[in-house]
Image 1 (tube, helix red, strand yellow):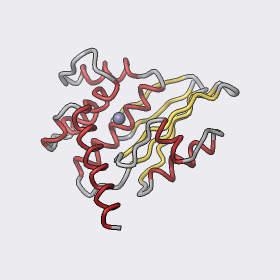
Image 2: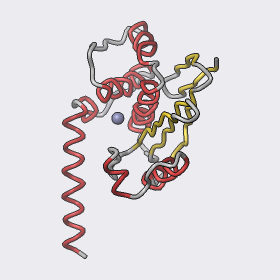
Image 3: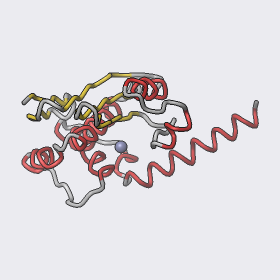
Image 4: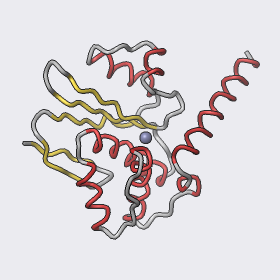
Length: 176
Ligand SMILES: [Zn+2]
């Protein structure tokens, strides 16, 4: 057995030795990090394959995960872009940590801790919304106010970000 530590969530849990979680820290180039991760595990790492796997260039953070059938090891890596605003930084990092928590089968244990702290958490949340709530929980624990957009359900926020991104791409294309 070993212990996995999730710094921003202030959460740790015991897992079997075949779980490997790493916090890769800040990066201004998530696409490059995504490529490195996929190359490490012999997965397709061209832009198109990464987009097909769910990677989006407008992400502010990402949790890569992969179960290696050959070794039987569950690998996860988180990475996030630097954000000067503390509440955005904390909630983004907690969000990505929560994805890793889910991947390593620790969501029930984290849910228990969130509820035990008095935080009101709805049951039956999608993983994205659960991670969104984890992002709000870390602010709540620290007595910090979330920004209004953080209270919008993840799906709506995600679609808005995707739309903004594609509009920007079009504008760039027209300007070039
Ligand atoms: Zn997410």
